[in-house]
Image (cartoon, rainbow, N blue to C red; front, top):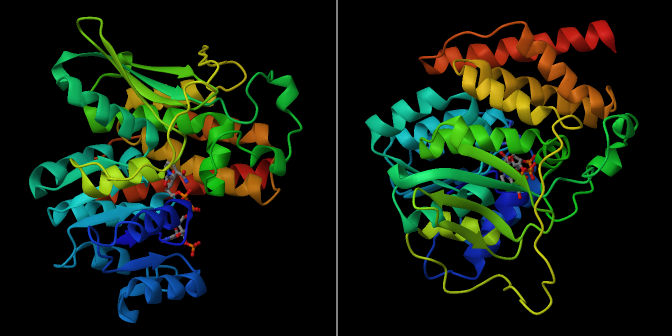
Length: 363
Ligand SMILES: NC(=O)c1ccc[n+]([C@@H]2O[C@H](COP(=O)([O-])OP(=O)(O)OC[C@H]3O[C@@H](n4cnc5c(N)ncnc54)[C@H](OP(=O)(O)O)[C@@H]3O)[C@@H](O)[C@H]2O)c1
């Protein structure tokens, strides 16, 4: 089942399934509001009309679909906090969650972990970096991990100073150099908060401390992440930057797809380069580390505030540079604890309300 089937990840997942019809059957689909594409997808993949629905009309369908008896794997490719109920419902039902919707894990970390442990479900990551780590971990155990190294392309503004970034446009920010993705994650990549969210995601998924998670800029996006083990061995996962590989693995794991979506041409790959992220030009990375280390509702506040700030930027209400400033301001107002889903919902609500207040007072 694919939640968010009309988006960038959702359509690529259907592409994977299109070429592996014997292995996967689609039994339900959801979109936000794009009924037209959803209808075409349902008819191509033989999904009954009552199982192809828009969550914009009724958000409860996400939980309802995730709990269907004939579903083995739920691909959560919804964007943003709206994906949380499906993440929780899937794990509660003891199913496999192929997780692209990082926001639900970041906002609800401790709650999601509790439901996963008690419900018997499993999370297989779709994010290319976490899929890479998942693959690297086949070479050793989590207790043997010395550190996880998440790679970052650096986004469209790599190499620019904070001053240079004051007047960047929406079009420039949406122009990612190596990946073609939905608008929210593309803007998140431009501020580097996406990498910060992935640091929190790695902590939640693999149970490693924040001191053991490092970020390195790797502009070619060929190495998708690495794991260094305690004996000094570093295992990396390399492939073309194509999300269909991690999507296919998350759907069929532990087996791999029998077909590659592009392979590396070593002769033309002239160089793989690495550099430190520029933490002054892109303060969102350290903001996310701080929120992750603070725990409680701080990650939910970070993620919720960012979602509203990104939307405000995409609606031309604020300049790009203010996205991170607003998230920092909202985090500075303080955060609390989280033990139940209701606490996560409340933290998200408060974060959004605070951003709206900043927007009304300052822009
Ligand atoms: N794209 C990538 O390469 C990539 C890589 C790694 C991780 N991710 C993560 O994967 C998730 C999806 O990203 P994306 O790039 O595929 O986003 P996207 O292209 O914007 O697609 C989002 C999907 O969610 C649906 N949706 C939007 N609002 C919704 C709501 N309130 N309730 C239910 N469904 C809603 C959309 O439906 P409509 O089409 O009807 O609006 C669409 O199907 C994000 O969490 C992102 O961080 C993406």
